[in-house]
Every structure is written in structure tokens, then in C-alpha cells.
Image: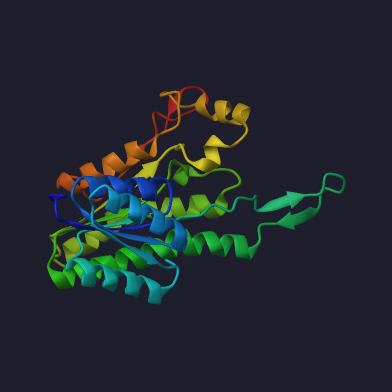
Length: 264
């Protein structure tokens, strides 16, 4: 797929990987639909893209709402006449162990709330499902070549304190195999699905954390540093252009290893 004059929809576009991906695709000639709940920040990203000579539209929306996903996909097609790439970057983290014990009694003092569980499932998993489903529908009905990009995580393997988050990312890691298998069954040959599983990435939540804790994390990264959002965005752009990449999830971790130097 050529990026020049293609149309890309990016959720979670107000910051981090989503913002960088949107700007990277725009710089390569794609027309961009920015989607995020943070209207002020996607307006900022839109102005940055427009100032750089790109074409884009900003759409404030909630990916957990079926009405909103239908609306922002329709708005993208109405604005640009087609849809070729859908990158689902919208995601949240609400950490907590399933059970917390009272130190004195050994009894359960607190447990992971259903609200914490549901909020992460709703945004990360259901939001991605709705976004990619509705984008794929538009691509099929329009007859446009397409690429669906769910964002998983290296923590799909399971991270203590992230039962909700890791569960969503494990599920998203399987999306490409299942979706492409269904497309093959239905003879949908013009739409691919490639997942991206980033490792520890240079975002605000990590750069502002306790530096001793950060260095402890980086000891298990062969590269010795955080992954840059630009490195992830560049891979997404490459996936769009390399049609042999399909039905798989690509890890971008810098060589994350477990203790004992066992590469994941």
C-alpha cells in the first residue's frame, strides 16, 4: 500500500504512540483522522499536522461507544472519500492486584474493583474491537485496500498487578490471526491485519516515574533504554507499505529479557 494519498484513522491520537503515529503517517502523505476523548489535545495535534502541510480532521469521540465508533468512521469517509488504515492506539492502565491482604490479620482487605476491571476491558479490548470492526466494514463496502493495526503490549505475557491490562493485551495479540483467518474464509483479500506489541516506551508515565525503578526496568532491556514512540510509528508505516506482513503481531521491545538473560 502506498501511503501517499491514503487515509488513516488513528485512535488515542492526542498523545504518545497515537500522536506520533498520526504525525508520521501524515508526513508520508497520508490524510489523517485523529480520534480521542481529549478534544483540546487532538486539536493541538491537528494544528501541528496542518502547519506541516498535512491534511487531517480531529474527531472527539469515545471508543467504548458503538455510536461514536460508527460516527468517527463515517466522518472519516465523508471527509476524505475512503479509509485505508485504522490504528487503534486508545488504551488505559488502571493497575492493582486482584487481592490485597491486611498485614496483621492476613485476611483480604481490598480486592480489584469491577470498575477498574471493566474500564480497562472497555477501552483497550472493546474499543479496539469496535474501531477495527467498523473500519473493516467501511473498507469492505468501499472496496479499498486496508490495514488494521491493533496495539498489544509486551505485557501480554502477564504482568503482576496488571491482570486487567495484560488480559486485554493478550487478547489483542491474537486479533491478527483470527481476523485474517475470517477474512480468508469470507474471501476478503484486500484487507490485512498486523498487530504491534511495544515494550517499555518513552511516554510520560515512564519518564516521570522513580528513576531508580526505571533503571531497574532497563536492566532487563538489551538495548539499555526505553523504546521511542517514533520507532513504533515507523514500524506501523512500514507495515502499511509491506504487504507480506499480515496475520501477525510484531514485538518492538529493544530485546526485553527475563532475569537470567532469557529472551522473551
